[in-house]
Length: 66
Picture 1 (cartoon, rainbow, N blue to C red):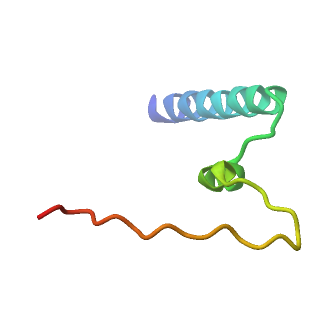
Picture 2 (cartoon, one colour):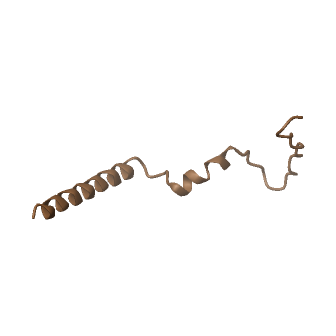
Picture 3 (cartoon, one colour):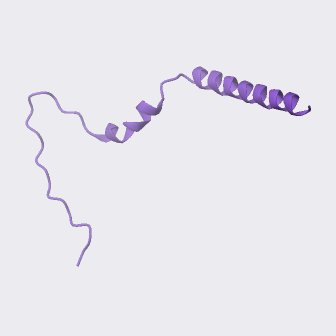
């Protein structure tokens, strides 16, 4: 019957670990998240003022050179 105390100990340890990580994440500001991180590649785009004509596009360079 040593299984029940071991299971309870491991379970409580995991709960404590989760709570510690959760509190640390909340304390760090909480500005970052999965949704925020997923759109970070779009942040490099330069903003345009509404009404300005779009910049002309350059033709794409071929990936493979023959």
